[in-house]
Structure formats: structure tokens, C-alpha cells
Amino acid sequence: MWKWLHPYAKAEHSYALAGKLMPWFLVLTIPSFIIGIVWGLAFAPADYQQGDSFRIIYIHVPAAMMAMAAYSTMAIAAFIGLVWQLRLAEMAVAAAAPVGAIYTFIALFTGAAWGKPMWGAWWVWDARLTSELILLFVYMGIIALYNAFSDKVLAGRAASILTLVGVINLPIIHFSVVWWNTLHQGATITKFEQPSIATEMLIPLLIMIFSFATFLGVMILYRFRSELLQREQHRAWVIKLVQIKGRG
Amino acid sequence: MAFTSFSDFIAMGGYSFYVWLAYGVSIVSVIALITHSVLTRKKILKQVEQRLQREKRIKAANNREHSL
Image 1 (cartoon, chains in turn orange, cyan):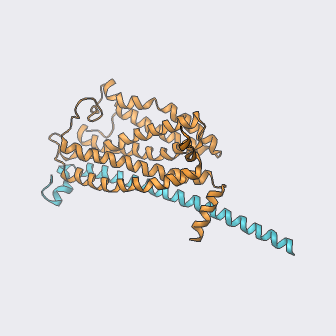
Image 2: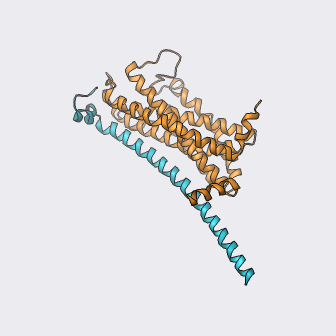
């Protein structure tokens, strides 16, 4: 049944497939980013309470959501890598970690720049903010652990185990605004009722979320290919690839 | 359009510092990520190429020794 999938478990085919998919993700990222950012910054109406400061939402929310999506992807890849001993999946974990870390940093930073005018403080030790900060530390831990081993098979396994341990933080982040009395507001879109945001503010937000998602795809694919080249550098297919590049 | 003029847009209803700070730092972080990714790939390709050339030189030197 899974026979058709098998060839992609070969490094060379994965490299080619990732290379084929990457431009499609890029083609989706660029226009959605331009449309989303222009719409959000200039065309969406100002908030009746927060004025124009609410426009930070158009990077804050997509970055925070996709930081968690990146982590979920990594956790699935780590699980597959550990259970079926698929080294390619462990490489995907290593490829996604820096992207997730940058997204988490963006979510935290834009949150601080939004918190200062609205709450009067850059930072508060609120449950949502603290759990998000822990996510950043988990990401940095995974990256550091992966780079600490020169044996990349061992590094991949160690990073995957840490990734799975860190999954516990995801529900904590998501439900932190429900479980604790937080300064951070509750969920606006990811809940079962109607989203509590005006449509003309919601559409550009959804476009930006889409853009952050496809950019995540571009970066994971790009870094995954680099990871493959690094790990397989003594194999014939990489040598052939480098020789062709050197000549052309 | 939510703003009447360009200077109005830059002013962001009095929140210009916070809005542009958030957008600016985000863009810089993303550019840093892209730069790092591209440089890493280039470094790897260069390393492999240098290794191949070194191996070629060693092979050539060995052949010369044998022919002497």
C-alpha cells in the first residue's frame, strides 16, 4: 500500500522532491505577503479601542500560530523518525527548528511592542507570555542539542527525543488563556464559536496566516535540502551534483 | 483606505513607534533567517567541492610519484 512512498525515503529523491515543491510554496508566499501586509497596514479599519496599534496583530498572530504549527510538524517528524528509524524525518526536525525559533521570537517581540502601549508594560509574567518564552527556550535547546553532536545520527535522535518531550508545552500555550487568569486576551479565531473579529480585519489576518504558513514551508524545504547535502556529502549523488554545479 | 495621507499612515494614529518597531524587527529577523539559510547551503557546497579537488590533487600527485 505504501510502496509508492518508498522511493521518497531515499535521500536523493527527497532532495529532488523538496526542490520541486519549494518554488510552489514561494509563489504562494510572495503575493499573499504583499497583499496581506498592505491590506492590514493601510486598508483594514482602525480598532475602536486600540486604534492603529492593533495592526501589530497581522504579524503577531500569524507568527505565534505558525511557531506552534512548526513545532507540531517537528513533533510528528520526530515521532516518525524515532519509531521507524527514518533519518530523513530527523533531518526535517533539524531543518524546521530554526524557522520555528525565529517565528517564536517574532511573536514575543511584536507582543512586547503591542503590550507596551496597550497594557503599559513590555513584559509581564503572564501564563501565555511565559509559556511562549518556554517555547523559544525549547527551540533553542533543540538547535543547540543538534549542533552539540558531531555524529549527526546521534544528534538527530537526541533532538527528536527533546522535541517529543517539549510537546507538553503546546497545549499549555494554547489553553493558558483559559486555565489561568491572564492579561493576554483569549482566542479570537481558534475557537468553536464565530471568530470575534470584524470580517474586514479578519480577511487580511487570514491572508497573513496563509503567507506565514507557506513561508514556513519554503524555509523548511530549503533547510531540509541543505541538511541532506551535509549528511550525504560522501554519497555519489551529492558528488555528482557538486561536479555539475562546478562545471556550469 | 484607513488613512487620509501618507504622513497620516506613517503616524499610525500616534502608535508609529510601536507599530514600525514590531514590523521592522520582524522583517529583519526573517531576512536574517533567509541569509543564514542561503549561506549555510553555499558553505556546504563549497566544502564538498574543496574536498573533491583535494582528493583529485592527491590522486594526481600519487600518479606522478609512480611514473618517476
